[in-house]
Length: 127
Image 1 (cartoon, one colour):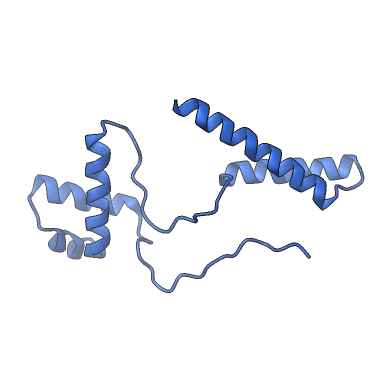
Image 2 (tube, helix red, strand yellow; image 1 turned 45 degrees about the horizontal axis):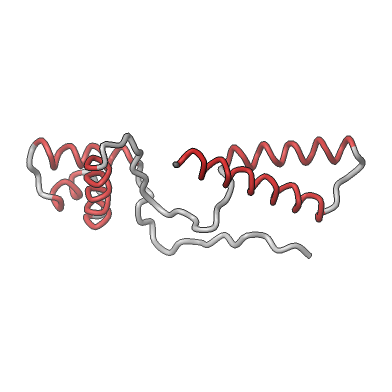
């Protein structure tokens, strides 16, 4: 039996707010010189999460990059994006219909090959 990736149920709702709230609170801190706790209270955010967002935003600004600051939980073992997963799932379904099924071993080989290709493209574009 194949083991599926673990889906962790989070005990807190830390950083489950929309990032636009963090952006607005950050703008209030910078423009109106509002304290972090006051801005967090005004937008109903955690002050610790707002501090974390502020640090990430300032680090992105010093790098002169247009990086998007993300907040919330990120899985550490994610290889494919959601779009890549759906594309691969659609491809596997079509291939299974055309060739009367695919074995799990063939699907794993396909996923591994795609992973290797994605990793090579990422490293070549980085540098």
